[in-house]
Length: 262
Image (cartoon, rainbow, N blue to C red; front, side, top):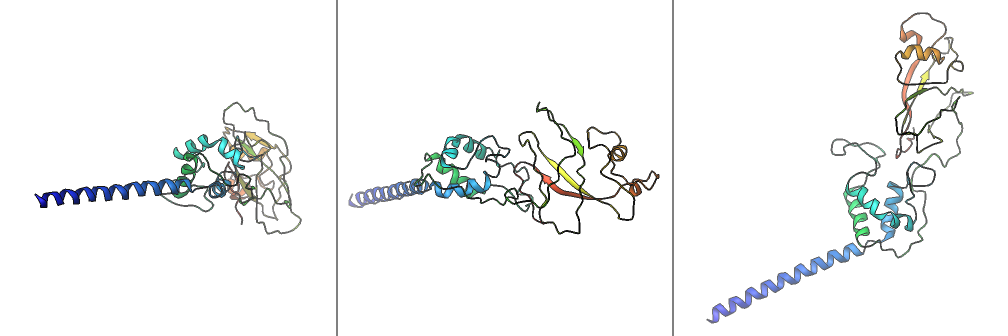
């Protein structure tokens, strides 16, 4: 009888011991969640979200100040949980790219825990620092504008255009940045910009001709001729001799895309 009594005491003691450990681990987890402060979340949001979520960019609202982020906390939580934002469709499990704007699992967990704990902040006046590498803040050496403005209806229908933007440099120049800046960022979705490389001994005049064509285009060669992009010193029908060489994707634009440095 004494042995059985001792067994029960030991069993109860073990259960109590495990209960204490379990309650302590839960308490520690809650404390770790509560310890996440705005000062930890702000740099992540500024670097990964504010590239678009700031005045003058494509996103519909700002995510810069504490009040901005707390006001839209439910939207932020939904966007993170559904992987809707940041807008990076590439599968990072398959391959990786330079200048990715993605949230790591740790960053997601930190932001979500912070929101679940009602967005605590010791300092709500943390200033927004330009933590995003942006060319827009730099004074450009050359600005090339459309020859003719393109008006968009903003009717929710995709419109594609072939546009030329001719320019000349006075001398050979090393280029670090090429950035496309739309005047209506809420309407322009993406741009692929290529460079045409003309041979100096050939005859051409890319300033003349039509400034742009709206797609669909049935015969691109005829369109390029009308845009003045082809050589003028040949009548052959071989596109390799009529057209200059192409340097593809010299400039690219998409909401969330950071301009590359060459």
